[in-house]
Amino acid sequence: MAASLLNKALKPIKHPNFLSSLRSFNLNSIAINPSDGPSSSSFTFDHTNSSKEKDSNSIYLKPPTSNESTEKTTSVTMPMSFMTGSIVGKRFYNKVTTRESDDGVGWTVMLDYRTLKTPSKRPLKLPTLALAKAIAAEWEYQQTDGIRPFTMPLMKLACTALERVPLTRTKIIEHLMKKFDQDLVFCRAPEDNTLTAGVHARQVEKVDPLLAWLNSEFGFKPIVYSSFFGGKQGEGLTTAVVNLLKKTDDCELAAIDALAAAAHSLVIALGIFRGKLQIEEAIELIRLEEDLQVDKWGLVEGGHDVDIADLKVQIASATVFLGLSRKNSFD
Image (cartoon, rainbow, N blue to C red; front, side, top):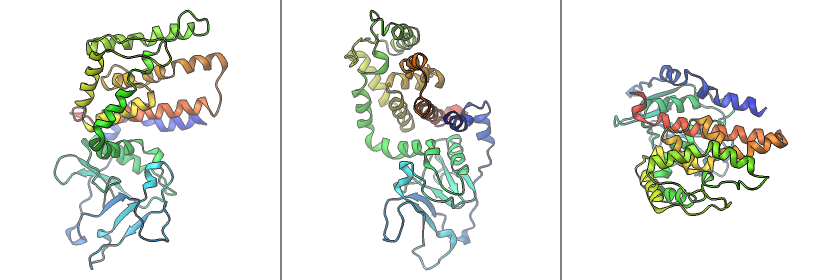
């Protein structure tokens, strides 16, 4: 079952015509007649609830404050549970489109006549049309019986990049670097132990090329430890990585943070960011030790297979988000 769910989730990513299909996806902007009312109607996510009778997982229509009560001035408020993964209500829109933002810098997504907004009610202004179309596709494929946020990873990453990263950039970098010394790729299984000799050999084969790339990329050789708790990397390498993270834009840092969290490795995340690693290669490195255990003892259905599926979705979605957010990728 998990394999079936994974194939459905990753089918657009693995398909060779994925990007071309995004370009051809019919997501033209809607022209709103001025007589229909202001174009500021919006789709937002909000935790505020002025009525005691409202259900926290329901979708509510907020009537216009002006006396001119027209359909076009209606806004839609979504509960904050959208960001937690629960089903937040039935699909209430018919058509999903994209249009250029009002200031001409970036792209937005439209649900019928409503502008899609972030949880803090800011317009969801995206850096590229390709990313806007991909997020629009996530909304387009929602079922009529309910909106499922867990099937919209690009939307979540976009909200993170637009809202969380600008406010907490320094803390995000500090958090990433706090775990850098204990990075997955720096921890090496003992060679002289019969129980770990196989793991050590596989690490030498698969991880050492990534460490060699790290040395070439930043000019400092990483230190490998046999201790489970790792050790301390040289100041030169640490400073070089921090400087790289500081130069990233908000979308890039959001993607790196998501990749590092899923991989338990900032180095693997940087490998994807710099184009050294592909999705499949990164997943193989992340699961290297566990896959050896599975090969030896077998796979637990409902456990290992679900973990693998979840990891693939997390790594693939963050990688796709990173690629689609880069303006020069579709010039």
